[in-house]
Image 1 (cartoon, helix red, strand yellow):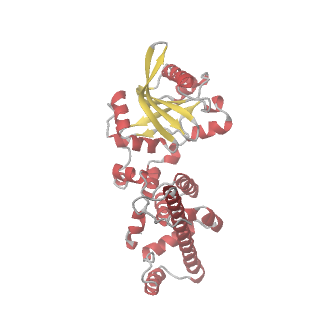
Image 2: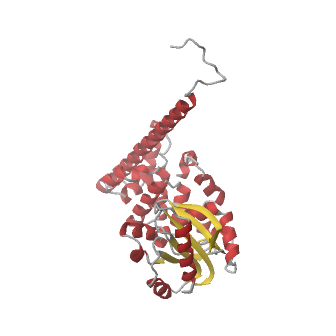
Image 3: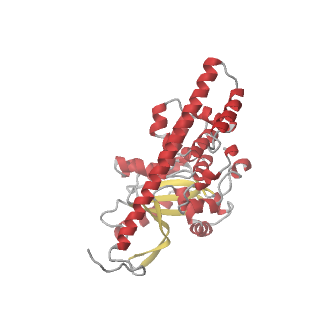
Length: 357
């Protein structure tokens, strides 16, 4: 072993790599510990809720028992939050909504308690709750993003665009591509009216690209706007170009300020051909086109796509705020969304007053 002293100003060779590896291990251990604590808490709340349901049903205990239980549990565990009467009622509702203990342990225990409350408060059907719970786990949504997706009716919009994907893409990819496209797209965050022109909408989407990516959904990466294509010495410009990480292909998005017309697909087809020949690599799948218009006749769109050999879809976009005022006030602000997408750890959940949970 070397007797040379270790310099505090100049780390030894290999130290930086070792430190980076240690940080990765510590961070991973912290994440595992947090997940384990959350899992135990959710399962505990589910068990307490089930006990309350069972005793009220079999022994005829009334609602007042919850107030008494809250008082006794708080006295027994003064340093532990979560035993307010309101939260105990949520535990009962949680157990009532999810009677399948295996599903709670295997799936729901992966979500924090405040996500569970959003699913209970915002949704009434078990199928919708299961769908949003699965998406929240898959995409690691914060509670605010989960609430926003519910209130903007993501489930009802997913996979609703008119496409020719089943005829132009192989089965696994066509299903994923269809589920990656919505109809309509909501651009309320732009603050524009229906009179806005195509270029104005395009400029606003680029300015608010964080929210635009959130509305597009998981997997989309922004490549550029007004992307130049030189074809035989003539210049053409794609409105918006994205790359989809799961589909492993480029996605060309064209904006039309009016009603859909079949001839719009001719221009989109030209752009797909140019991207496939000039931009995509041999490892990329065929480029997909998405035409966003202010309105469309669904039958006309289906006819127009019927003879196209390239994968394309047609969907509408909505510019005006379409949610009731009482729902809009509960949506997260643009700043909150940007903060959460930037890597916030969700610590605001744990900071909430127990009485408000």
